[in-house]
Length: 508
Ligand code: GLN
Image (cartoon, rainbow, N blue to C red; front, side, top):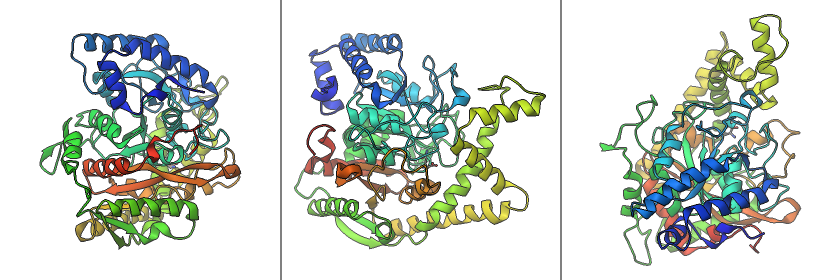
């Protein structure tokens, strides 16, 4: 089925159509709302409120008419349902918050509103962002536009599916252990998680606060640069928001100017001098051969653009899974204690006393994966186990961060490898093995444990469920505050290749 936005390659193309009055923001918004209605089988959107979207379209329209349009004025996007939004419901994919309405917008949502984007509503995610397939959402699984029988990835699966399908040109996501990069990879789009602290966590429903970071998803690296620039910046309401970096204020404009400064060469070797570190640990057991091949071919393209490949070692990579799955549940068990049926969320009908009310409400309100993690988290933080598990995991976290710093100190400028060991698995296939889903996070978790920026762009296809070709992602990891360089390198790759332009439905 042809969708309205199919005619625009990216945000820049739509910008041109809006600026030259080929289409009005309102017409555009109506068309997109119509397409969202036509594609409900994807199950990507969890709340759509046409009158709210059209009101934002009206404001964008007026700015355009006054000649005050910015790069994102009128651009249709939508938000992962983990960001609180005024107007649209905010459920975090949970029964616990089934009817929750926030009295305010998250800082990231506010920033994109200020940039005059038009929000089409809220996008499905795994419950409290816990998952890798968007199968743990109270509203059921989201379908991957490339093959409706496979997952779009998670936990920002609704965001990935909506962008991949062509319903919107950008979406917000959050990445605690890979949830922007992994669904971007499995759905054939681009996604970036910036350095921890670059985008505000205020109004982002907390999962694991020392790992949670907002990110953006779109069709191209150039579009990501626009979106990331809009959402990044210091926020006094987030205690871990970064005020300055390398002596430069982390202010709006930094990402774009960094991105532009790395992009100023116009020769045939735009990546000359770039050293790409390729960790041997990212190409070991468990990596699907066809995925490995697609990533290898992408590296060859980057070498043809002048980059040099260096083999590096990140020896503690395998420990990222146990360390993450101790630290994240520990923080989650603490963060989710606030859902006590008194202050927020679902309250059971029958109970005997306060403790019973809280226990029953939490059992009814939280899904299985969330309950499992609260139990693990409570266990590893309890007296007698804290040192053995939680503290030990924090020590491993430090080792993982040091692995990266050693590599960046004298071996390479960026690190590259796969995002996921396989292409998107079939819906339901992970539910029989409780740890299979966690093992798939092997290449993304350490980036969050270290707080580094990470990006994922499409780099090919590999046979998946029923041998259908499914998208493969290339991961780029940078040193702290190097998201401008990551985006610039990704942009050069996209000038030389067309993987990011492939669309589901068309022949790959
Ligand atoms: N798959 C990981 C988890 O379930 C990462 C999720 C995320 O980044 N939000 O914890």
